[in-house]
Structures are given as structure tokens and as C-alpha cells.
Length: 414
Image 1 (cartoon, helix red, strand yellow):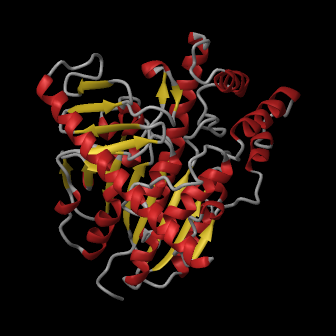
Image 2 (cartoon, rainbow, N blue to C red; image 1 turned 180 degrees about the horizontal axis):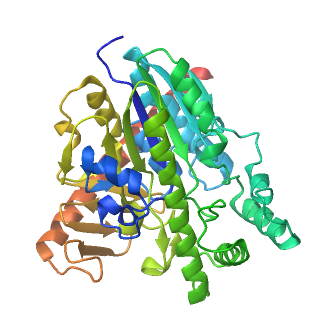
């Protein structure tokens, strides 16, 4: 066996940092993660590069923000497929990085946005995305009486999302453990769990609310994504069931620490957060406020300590490589980090402050006092504006280079 450590990267969809005990949450939802954070390495200011999976995962698997190519700027599935596949095929992925280091690699992802359809199998020796399974059926066969309402609710939520977000981690847990036991060492394994993603439907044994309450609340959210018409009761049901899914996902962490072969480095993080009426919205995918970009990040079975400096998930490939080799990871830390979406909006996050740029306005927040009102520090606003402008210019230059390269390649093909 080489000196490199086995590495398991666990991505948890939609988990907010402030709902984790080690990050200040008080709901006793993450007892296993809390223990690992206490014993291991915790990043107190980890930042998602985007507020949705497709933007975040493409970035944290390659170390670069995706750029917009001509012909791939739409929001329909075909345009998104081209946008994501072009980025992944043109960049070095984490899997390819580990393969060059002599690792056997595998991925187990329950999220359709990180399936082989979008090219996320790039570089993996073994890849499972469960795209042929209809996991929603399991929610109608879990020991409760199936009725017309529950069947309609599940099918409606599947239709609304255009994808199956019902895959429980228990459905493929044995596959993960079996692969780690048979893999040649050192190995790298990426696991992507969607149990915390909406719809919030925790399994039996983890429910603080009955399905008779959770189905209508989830359907109400799908019908009114901004949550303007949600009743306080539905809001409470949604937040309770969301917390139940976190508690359930934390059980995966406890079991994985016990069962995964050869005591790997276990790197746990969220891909983005989730809103529950914060800034007037529910869910994720649109804005860049803290509830959507502040994510947990913990390393178990490796270094110990706490990192206070901002850390962008964009630097995850560098961090993973350094940890695997037992090297220092200081180069992966920054004084400020960026997030963006395709609207376009750009945010820069410093130590205790955040600046958000929109095409026609901006916002500045003092995070040390809580994100309750805009900060009126003109110096920070000027700094934030300058940093965002530099980022946008660099990003635009990358797009111009890519467009020119595509044009040359097209001319040569004629």
C-alpha cells in the first residue's frame, strides 16, 4: 500500500450549516457529525460556489467556475446538459486527479443533476447514479397505508421537479461498503446523498410529523415556491420535516464511520443550503444569501483543529489532494471567496462580511452581527464592488477565450 490515504467525499444536498450542532445549531440533529467535528478538522466559514447543485458540483469537482458557451445559455435541460458536460469534459476532475495519483475511484450519487447524463461519470472507474430506478415507489411502500392522496402527492412532486429525488441512502449503502471492501488501495469514493433535498419526507422512525401533514405542506411549497401563501402551520411542518431528514442523514455518517473499509479520510460537506422564508424565499437555486451558501465542512480521521478563514468549495480538489498526501492545506484558504449564479448575481464573502452584486443594485452585510440589516460601511462596500468587478472581468475573459477556441475548432472541422 502507498503512503496516500483512502478518501471518501460525502456530499449532502441542501444542508444548512446553521442546522448542524458543530456550526451553532441547537436542534441536536447531527450528533455523529458533531463528534467527528470535535475530534477532527472543522471549517467554520465554508462557502458554496453556487446556490444549486449543478453550479456547485461542477465547481467543487473541477476547481473552476463553469463558463457560459454559445448555444448553452438556456435553462432548459438540453442547454444545461451542454453547459455542464462541456465544463466537465474540458477540465480536470477530482476523479482524474486521484487516478493520476494511483487511486481506484468510484462514485455513488442519488442526485440526477450529478448523473452520467450530465457527464459526472468523467474519470471514475466505477459510477452508480441509479437513474433507471424509480425511488418514489419506496415512499408508498414503507409500512403505511397507501391512499390516493399520498400517491398523488408523490407523483406530483416527482413531476414538478422533473426528476426523482426520493433515493434513500439506505437503498445503496451496502453497495458503497461493498465497493470500499473490494477496491484496490488507495481508493477515492464520492457519495452524494439527497435525503435532505426537498420534498422533505423523512422515513419511518425519523418523523416528527405524520405523512398526512408533510404531504400537503410539501405540495403547498411546490405550488408556491416563494412561500408567499404558505400558512404558519405549513412552514412549521416543512422546517420540522427538513430537520428530520438531517437527523436521518446523520445516521449515515455514524454507520459509514464504522463500516467503510480501512478507516478512510472522511470529508463531509453540503453542496448548498436551503431557505425557509429567509429573504422571502423557500428552497434554493436563486439567491446568494448565507442560508444558501454557508455550508458545513468537516474532515474526520485526519488533521484536527478549526479553520476560521473563508474556504470556498471551489478549492476542494486542492484540499482533498493535500489531505490524501498528508500535506499542509493552507494554500486552499483565502481571505475572501466568491459565489455566483446564472442570473447573473455574484457574491464575495470575507471574514465577517458579505457583498452581493446584482446588475442594477448591491447589498452589503455584516455577518458578525447577524444578517438582519444592510451594513453601511462604505469602505467595505467599495472593496466588495472592486473584488466582484475583478472577478467578473476574469470570468468574462475565460468565456471569450472559450468562444474563440470553439470557433477555431468549428472552422477546422469544415
